[in-house]
Amino acid sequence: MTSTAHSTSAYIKVFYVLLVLTIVEVAIVYLGLPRMLLVALLVIFAVWKASLVAMHFMHLKFEKRTLAVVALTPFVLCVFLILMLMPDIFPH
Amino acid sequence: MSEAAVMHAVVEPQESPLTPENWGKLGMWLFLAGDAMSFGCLIVGYGILRHASSSWPVPKDVLGINLTAFMTFLLIVSSVWMVLALAAIQENNKPKFNKFLGLVILGGLMFLGCQAYEWTHLLTHRLPEAGISFSNNLFATTFFILTGFHGMHVSGGVIYNSCVLAAVNRGRYEAKHVEIAGLYWHFVDLVWILIFTFVYLI
Image (tube, rainbow over all chains, first blue to last red; front, side, top):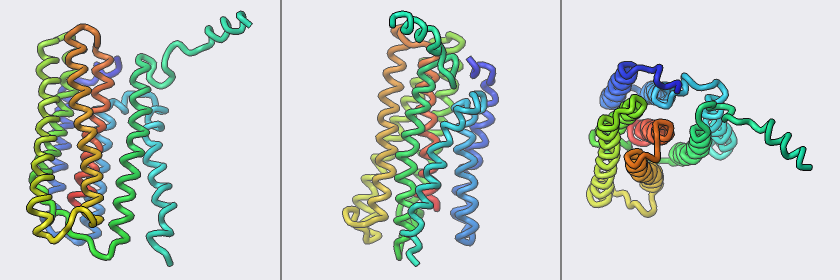
């Protein structure tokens, strides 16, 4: 099995990164940054954390590339969904 | 005709094309891709409604984020326990596996307990105090649908993991089945990371 190659200490390292990112996220919400900057930072942190979970805990990093394409499909479809709904958000 | 059938049986792939060692893993990945689309639609729908609304409460002020930050921590820790449970069963260490998968189930139950407390507190105190009626307000509706849909996934995960724990101890499941259950559990963690950011923090 591919996952046995991945040692336990590497998982603990990923856990600490996730923990620190979560603390930073909560901290910057309390900081009172400008709205656009806050949203941009939070989205970057969320995507960063989500991809850490997918790559390491779900072993996507060690699977075939095509499986990553399967996993990314819903995100591509969601981007299309947003684009298709654009006329409703900005009617003029 | 029968010759063709035999030929066909020969060319049929014996192993899963994307996850060669495990067909079930491919099945779980395909399910998760579909499930991600469900969550994606709900999150996009929430974003559109919020963007189109003339007024939207600041989620941090109405919902509070300290308890939810702890809930995020719970799910991340239980994800790590799941990884350790898989490592234990791959080394054939059953007592260690039982301990860690037991902790994963406990973490899931604690998450559900926190969510039940949070919902009750919101419905009886915070929402009325903020002047929000949960039955005809988009902020409350999108919140309860998103967190409720996720909470159902956690409940499903707790039941799933309990079944896996029982099946491994009865000798019916092995490491590859635990790995598939792990994929589901990590996905639930991943979705919560996104919900925590989009619904509570932003």
